[in-house]
Length: 186
Image 1 (cartoon, rainbow, N blue to C red):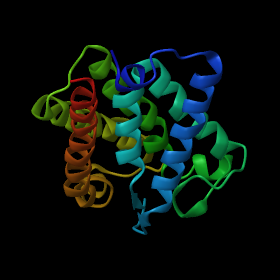
Image 2: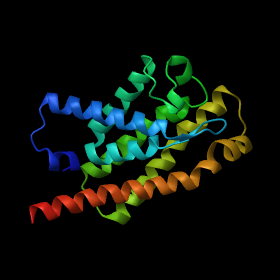
Image 3: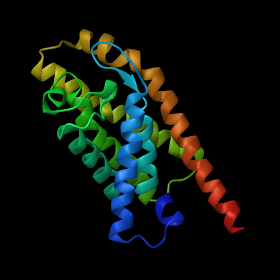
Image 4: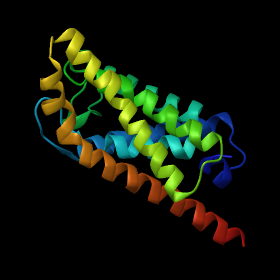
């Protein structure tokens, strides 16, 4: 059982649609809390995506990130720095944007399988964060011709500590929400 089903056991289509909108809004808000860096900004998007994935499960979490990407493609300023549109989505961040879906699905798969402890949730969050780098680095390598030293120094290493911290924060938020739920039922 996922956190969202534990809190909202009866999930009609309208409730799930509202959850997708709320989750995509959370991701969009997280994107606006960003530190401009070159070539890609550091933001709280990944923290929000982990929370959505762990809370909603793989299918609804993945769908929520797809909705977020569709909102950005349609021109809503939901990406870091208020960016939007297909041109932005094809730029340097394209691989990371695509990887957001995998990140939510991986966190959601863990939630669907009942992983709830702080250590296990943190490990899953770290693995999902690491998985983000596969498409995130593949895009600039294949499309922009970036070499491995450039990818490591500019596209990965500056973000590792922040991603690890966001993974721990996401795990603490999710395990805290489970603790609150358990205390309410006791």
